[in-house]
Image (cartoon, rainbow over all chains, first blue to last red; front, side):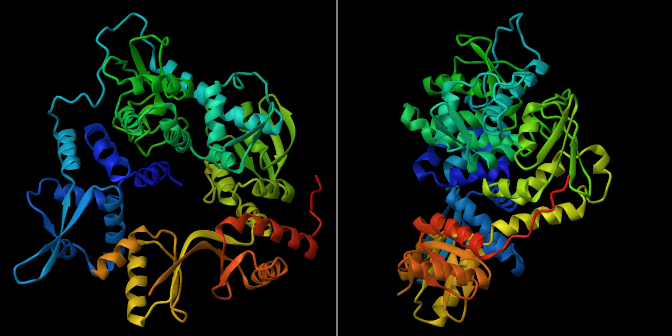
Length: 473
Length: 72
């Protein structure tokens, strides 16, 4: 799952009220536009941004080739769920009904403001005016973010595989607040002094850093009202963070009380850095500025983000250290306890040298991992992402036999595939069935259909419901 | 009138489906809402975890697993 799709999913569940409030901030709107919307939806928004009147649905249809109907449906779905696009039905004097689309006014205004500048909003952060002598370097911020985040990961993984309290750079203390959050998100299970990682936690650890940050922040968001913080405030601050640039310090004087409280928590995660808890300024770290971009945060220093200048490579989770032979033996050139802990989730490690651990992928080790909720795809993608440069030279990075075997081992344990949702049935006529099933397909929510029995299965029902109601009228 | 029934769609091959139906029958039809076709059944959302673990247990009982080739 890509990182922004998680955030999108969360955002889609928010009510209209939250959306309207969010769209008051140009930074939020730009962030949503930049990283949440599918490309087609972006095109539609851009096309409609400077339109003065409503846009007839027929005209929109004319833009699409007949075979693009499905993509169009998906784009419109997202825009509709985020309340970016509004639909209106106008009845002409002749009685003919025309559907028109329009952008939500707040959204359009904010996006225009974000794109062209102007307005007196301070939505993109205000740099601190006093450039004190104690400015910190980008390199320091990198290290800080990496250290804090690896601490959290190691806290989750290390205690499960029995490497806890190892020291050696990682394994430092994790704040109580963070622990509580991990527990609330069901990433870990705490019983007395014992900490066990859960199925969800494994998925969490194997994701890329950006996705991890979002997962944790979404738990944080869900918990915000309980701490007396407004969800909207928290969300818009996160989007604001995504638009800041690294190495610059920003003043805290323009922040709301909720956001000041957040700074405390975020610095515990390593998302922002504050020289002291009373300091009048804060620095965003790499974790923060990549929140709303699709490029990787800690491991992959990419140059695609406009907000982040090219930086020195951090040693965080060093890239490319795993070699796998066709006989399932695995060698990992690493001395990072975190990497070793992660590898030991699905590998039978046998030997550890100062700069190398070696082991073997076995049926037992893989099926143990699968039982804990790690999928073969996750294992394979982890191994591929961290393969040694020597292996990267091959056309298929991992030996195909090993990949196949991992999948087969998983399949042995997991014989069913489940999707939660709704069965639609008891249609009155073939025509009614066809109509609805095709609508479901165009929305991309159709999972299974049986024409003979006239029923089908969808994983989301909201829009089908509204569609049916609209048809009834 | 169209009806929507909430549940979890389980996709599996026919042999596994037979086992699932068997489990369902042995436990007073507490799991399955509807059998949709040879490879799909609809299961109660709340019961899916239990059904999965029962299936695991049954497979362990019925299928002899090949010895793992774990020679170092």
